[in-house]
Image (cartoon, rainbow, N blue to C red):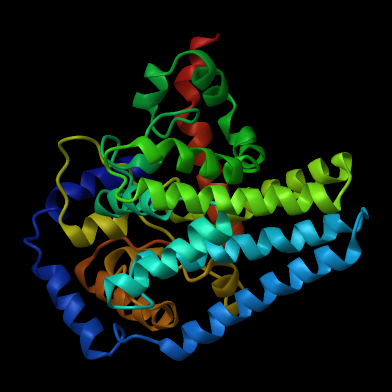
Length: 349
């Protein structure tokens, strides 16, 4: 990966574009037909996820009060991760072009099946797409328990300061709580002014958890029920977090006042992960993060070809384009987390 300091030095001349660079790339993408809807692909993909969900629920009902249910919990964690990726694609209008079927599909996938507010997540994710890795504007790098820059680290106090000192080691263990965090954040967002349909979304969330907890505590004894929830939600959070973690963590951070055109803002802050069809399936196409950020409504199966066009175009313009393997992407993300926590470790000496 490019040295952050060296990269920052390159940004001033690169940022002088007027948007025409992206326009030329966009024309190449449209001329290649890569923005066309792919109904057959999404029918097969969503059908496979629905079948996997039905299979997991059937196995749960058949096994009854057994410790073998923990295997069902593992499988259900993967299914929930795929539901999250389906909700993501729906929110970006990759599946439908019209708003109504998009919203209905999103509410079913997120609120009903996943227990996450579609409206809350879409609002948060839209702000991330507009300003990825921007210290002031991207909610995904807002300082909370973790810090994403040395400036944030120097301001951290209390628990965030303690976690920030050890965040590289704690990052993946903390992802086991992400499933719970998504649900808690969804309920908390119901009172936010930005929530358009709080009653509908809240009702769907309550219905989801009534069925979820009702089924688990009806079929399983209390001890097995708690173990099932812990395994299911813990692995779901780890899976979903591991899909999103390689996308931007450790890439260029944009400070307040730094101006970049759209093309460079998206390319320089994003990382692609290579690995073939297995990685494509597990990550739902988000391993083509650069192309996804440049063309959010592009259907997933078009991303591999778009990647080749975009990488070649960036090479023509001399724009750094970062693509690496999955394990290497995790190393880079953890290295970044360790590096930005240095001021907090230094303060303890």
